[in-house]
Amino acid sequence: MSGNKRFIISGGGTGGHIFPALSIAGELRRRMPECEILFVGAQGRMEMERVPAAGYEIKGLPVMGFDRRNPLRNFKVVFHLVQSLLKAREIVSEFKPDVAIGVGGYASGPTLKAAQRMGVPTVLQEQNSYAGVTNKQLGSAARRICVAYEGMERFFPADRIVLTGNPIRAALLNCTATVEQARRAMGLEPDRKTILVVGGSLGAKSVNEVIGANLEKMRGAEGVQMLWQTGEVNRGDSEEVLAASGVTNVVQTRFITDMATAYRAADLVISRAGAGTISELQALGKPVILVPSPNVAEDHQTKNAQALVARNAAIMVADREANSQLLDCALRTVADDGVLDALANNIRAMALPDAAAHIVDEIMNVSESESK
Image 1 (cartoon, rainbow, N blue to C red):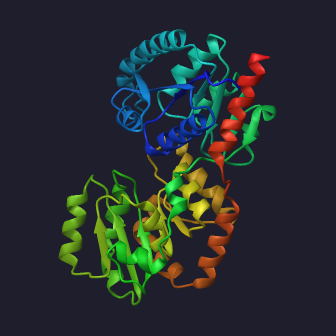
Image 2 (cartoon, rainbow, N blue to C red):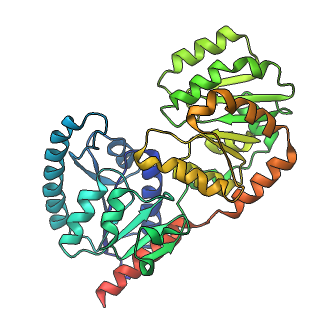
Image 3 (tube, rainbow, N blue to C red):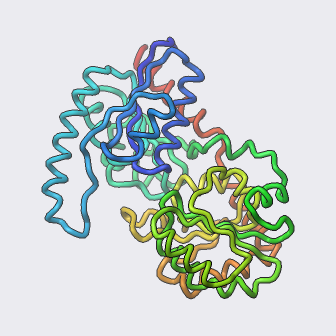
C-alpha cells in the first residue's frame, strides 16, 4: 500500500468512541507515516478538543442527538441533520478519502452516509453487543463491519463482519507497579482488599448517590477499602456526604488520570457498562460489577452487560436496584477469592487483543481491493 493514502475517521461524543478512533489513527500512522488522516466530529463535543490535542485535524458538523423526552425539539435536530449531510458531502468531496471509517457517535452517520453515496468505501467499528440505529442503517453498504461481540449477524450482513474487538489505551497494558505500589500511589492502604468505583469523567450520578447513601456499610467492612471516582457532576454533594459520614476507608477523587495504576490497585471494579470500559476490563482480567446506565440509546449497556453475565464474566446490578443491592453485592464478592478468580478468568477469556491492528488490517484490505 502506498504511503499517500487518505482516510476519514468519523465519530465521537464520548471517550468510548474517541479512544478507539485515536488508536486506529495511530496504527494507520505507524504503518503509513505519510498517510493523511482527517477526523470529522460533532461541533461542541469532546472530540473537537481531544483530537487536535492528539495531533490530528478535525472538522465539525452541527449534528445533534434526537431528544426522546421532548419530540418537539427534534425539528431543530432534523434541520441540523440536513445541514450536516450537506457539509459532510462537501468535506468528503474536498478531502477525497480512500476509505471512510465510522466509530460511532453523532457525526459518523452523516459522514459515512455521504461517503457511501459518493462511492467511497466505508468501514464500521461497532463497539457494542447491540448495534445502534445509525450503524445498522450504514451496515448494508459498508465493506467491513468490525465488531467486538459474537452473534452480530442479526444486525449486519454476515459476510462483512470481522470479529476484531475494541481498541483500548495502550498505557493500560504497560503498568509496571505491584498491587501494593499501585494502592499507595492512589492513597490507599497497601494490604486491604480494594473496590474501585468509576463513572467516567462526568461521573455516574445514580451510582454516586448509591455509594453516598450506603457509606455506613463500608465502616463495618474490615480489611476492605474503596477508591471512589465521583467525576465533576454532583461531586460536591458526594464530597460532603463522605466528610459528614466519618468513614475512613473510602478515598474519593474527582478524576483519575492514571487509570492503569487504579485498575492495578483494584480487586473488584464497579462500573457502567460502556463498550470501551468493558474492553479494558477484559484485557486486564478485572472482576467487575456492571451497573448499566438506563439513559443510553436502545439500552445497549444492559445488553453489553448481559453478554458478559451469560459467560459468568461479570455481575450485573440494575440501576434501579443498585441502592438496595450494589454495595452488599460488592462487599460479598470482594471477600470471596473463588468468585473473584472465576470472574477474572472468564472476563480475560473474552479479551480480543491487538484490536487496532486487526481493524487496520481490514481497512488496508478494503483500500487495496479498491486500487486493483
